[in-house]
Length: 297
Length: 278
Image (tube, rainbow over all chains, first blue to last red):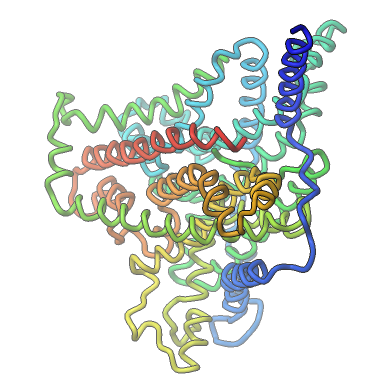
């Protein structure tokens, strides 16, 4: 009788233990059989390479054809010499940097606080951060345009007068769905309570705990959130167009109407730049754990 | 928590309030259904909705189908290998960033051929005797835009479905095999049922993604394309008729409703998906 009971309990214990093990971010199964590459994989991967690299190769060729029909780098030198284009590029980079900074300094403390003190709010936070997906950018833009039309003048001069102050706060909101999830995943993976208790009991302030204890431990997650935010800011065009701010993609479209070669060249560069950013991220992430992809949902 | 709440209320709540409030009021500020009765009665506003739904449906289906195959081909490889990294970063670029640059890459590939160059592939095909544009293809058409959408739908599917594919345990396959199941039976009775909720969920996300996307279409065609985001753009700018602000806001509410229905569906499916796949 007692033996059966003990066995039952042992079974439950082992089961719980197993479940716990499986909950871990997981040592990948190494038992997956490997051998000669199977034919269907080769076919799919080849097709994918052609399908996805084709337009990039075509862009490279297209951008090297000058307006006089000969091959050369004039489209690329125009990227540098075109003042409007350069200005829009700097505007976008400024917005991207500032947005990434605000995203991290807003989301990290919020996530830490909710995990530590108010776990009941987790569900609410998940719901709120998913909202920007439910509300398409064009709809946010129409709301902002409406606001722009009816806002008092102090708000106009404080908020809408410069692309940096107008777009940055909105892009922070647009970045929330993935920045929240990236940072939350990172924070969940560390032993938050122990770290904070240790730091606080040694007399560190909240600020220095955040900067010197938590931040280094969730570095990868924070970088992931920041890089994806930068990618989003460099690519976002709908809201900027509606609100009549000249950011990089907006200027790309304008230049493209008269001189598509220049736009194609700069598009190619920006795609490669963002690719390198995310590729670098995959190495940083790989250093810690297996999973490299950051999911929006 | 307080800074976050205040931030959300101002920068998400305020524009959202403007949209919903404006859609239900007249210029004098009185409650009205008029804006909605307009967008649901005039074909000028019906057609874009229909087009948007059709475009989202077919690009989501195509993207989900090929994205799953591509993800399966990648997952079968070494975890943490170079192939994984390249595909994961490449998918990220195309799915989250590429709107306008993608449109230009597309113009460089399939644009109408002209004396000053034109699309590379268009030119190549013309060279061997296939004139795409003579056969009715146009990059600035609904089909052309859809084709460009597929370039970000497939990568998004790869990102969404990869965790589910990784969750398929080799043990299940081995168990099925040792019980005498063939590969087809394993797929039919184990892999497909386990994957189905995750697949349908991802399909829904792809649908919503295409439905709310506008950047690629804007760069390829401009405001002339009959999709819902474009008609919102038109109405805000008064391109077709002046004083259509509130119509734009009503269309905005319509878009939010569509995406909300999709997200509720996603949430329902996701609950089932969690049963087997963590």
